[in-house]
Image (cartoon, rainbow over all chains, first blue to last red; front, side, top):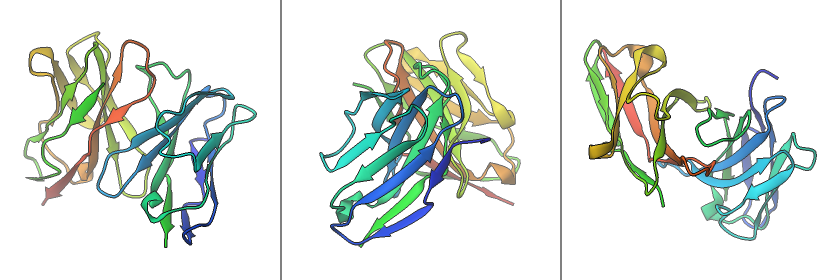
Length: 115
Length: 114
C-alpha cells in the first residue's frame, strides 16, 4: 500500500479482555516500530523489529504486552487482560532500514479505550 | 539516557506571524534530532531532521530549525504562519551511537488565528 495501515482504527475493550492490534507497514520496509501515545503526551517507544527479529522490547510496560512479526511484514501487538491504564493510541511506524537517522513513516494509530 | 523537553504545550499565533516552537534535548552522545507534525486523525509526518551535516536545517512547508550544541536546543521556526500550520508538533531525539528508537517530547499544539 501507499502508507502504513493500522486496524482497527478504534477499539473498545472491557477490562480483562485480550486485544490484538494490526499493523501493515510499507511494502519492503525492513524496520517496524510500535509506540504508545497517552492523551496529552508524546509517543513512547514500545518495541522494534528488523524483519522478523524483535531487536528491542525494552519499552513494553508489562508481560501482558506481546508483539510479533512472524514473516517480516505485518505485525500484531497483543495486550492480554487489558487494564484501564492501557487506554491510549497505539502507533505503528516503519522505515526502510531502521538506522538511527532515518525517517519514520507512521500509521494513523489504533485508539484503545478500556472500560 | 536521552530526553526531550518542549517548552509550551500550547502556542497561539496570528496568521502571518512568526512561529517559534522550542525544543531542548539531553543526550550523552551526539544526537540526531527530528521534528514531526501530527494533523488531526493523521499519522505523524517528518518535517525535518538534523544529522550533523549542517546546523541549520530546512524542512517542508517553510519550516526550519537550528541545532545549537552549546544551548542543547533545536527550536523550530517559520517566518509567517499559515492557517494550515495548525497541528501538534513533536520534537524527538535518537542517538548516533546506533539506537534506532526515537524519544519524543510531549508535543506543542499550535493554533493559528485569522
